[in-house]
Image 1 (cartoon, rainbow, N blue to C red):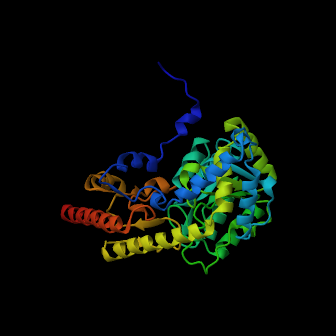
Image 2: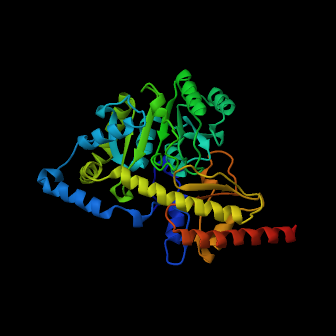
Image 3: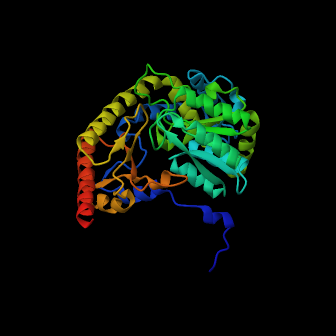
Length: 400
């Protein structure tokens, strides 16, 4: 039978990371591919206790909830955002979602028409690209360096394309792991206000900051509350399975996203939201995050040392100040997409760089996750991977 799918369905693409995980989630493969926290560090007992408190509160906890989400948890989120200087919002300006990924989808649903332009960093979060393209938007990459979007290119592309939205991950970005400078953050907001452009600030990793003495001010904290939508999640600091994220921003936009969510799923899992409230208020959440930071920094340093000591030709990398990822650019003769099957057959996996680019993809780039593998796996996996790359370069030299 022939199925008459909607035209926009042909804009959908499978997630490169999810496709890779289907292959590598098997015994014997060291995976640097997924953006996964370490499940051995999950606060399982605290989560179990939080759910026990929900069930002890009465059967009303099992009832339908409001679309915007469990109010006490929104109040907790408001307080946690205020620590970062985000003080322009009230609980009416916050909506809980099924992970921050749903925020990107709902934002696209209410903001983007077919053909609308959205600007992103290049490279940027590949699942965001997947969503934007599914709504038939035109995604244009802005040239970026270690400090964020390059002002001249941003200004030129605003003038040329007249974008409706700008999507950024300015703190410990996925995939590049970079931190925007304060000057670049202010510059982006100035351009957004000047040109009436909405900014979607994605901040899933902001709490995983290695140097606690430094300050990385969110765009939402620099804004007057009219331009920036801020989204984050509990997936990287509590547990991913609860699938709870949130969006905070201008009331008119959040209200429209709420109406779209009503049509989509009525509301996200209210049991998880209530449990998260008890988890945040009855458990040392900050202490748990500090433990994650300490462990992830050890693993990041171990991976950094392994990569630097491997003496790979043409290697370019920055040492992350937080988050979960390294971004590598290798010798231009290496194609990380073509080499991935051989890497998996040898017992190691990574994500090739190509799917992260909105514009001209680099075939010699890749993303590595350091938060999930152990230090022993990091040392072994990097050796396997870099040996493969060196062999490939040697073959290319012989053939040329």
